[in-house]
Every structure is written in structure tokens, then in C-alpha cells.
Image 1 (cartoon, helix red, strand yellow):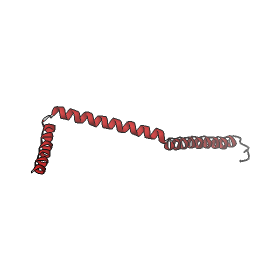
Image 2 (cartoon, helix red, strand yellow; image 1 turned 180 degrees about the vertical axis):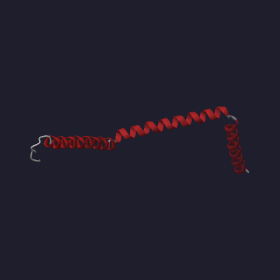
Image 3 (cartoon, rainbow, N blue to C red; image 1 turned 45 degrees about the vertical axis):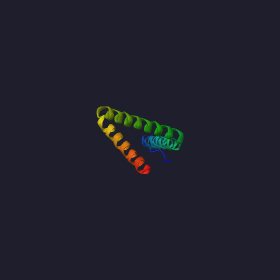
Image 4 (cartoon, rainbow, N blue to C red; image 1 turned 60 degrees about the vertical axis):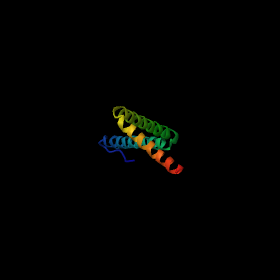
Length: 95
């Protein structure tokens, strides 16, 4: 540490600066520890990712369902095409 100056306020300023630096270092260290804890908590990360994926799949299913309801000719056409292909394959094998 520094020796106190005869003017007086220089020593507390240095001490205050050191204490402020220590407080900032503690805050940074705390944030780092929290980040590492979150990163190492695999169970929680997997649960969060599963919830996110479930939400995304449900939204996609709802969107697809709405499109099928608004455009019923498209799925009917696809179904007819698939049935035609299956019928042709069965017919060719029997011949």
C-alpha cells in the first residue's frame, strides 16, 4: 500500500479505488461462475431445448393443419397420386 500523504485525501482515494476494483472483480467473477453453472447444467439445457423444439413442432403442425383446412384439394390430390402409384405397382406385380 502507499504511505499516507500529508494532504490526507490521497490515501482514501487509493483505498476507494482498490475497493471499487475489488467489487468490480467480484461482480465479474460472479457472472463468470453463473455462466459456467448454466453451461454445465445439462439437464436444464436439455429440458429447455426440448420445450423449444416441442413449441416449434406444435406451431408447425398448427400451420400445416390450417393450410390443409384452407386448401383441401392439395392433400386430396397428393392422396390420389399416392393411391394411383400403389395401384400401378400392385397391378404390375400381378401381371
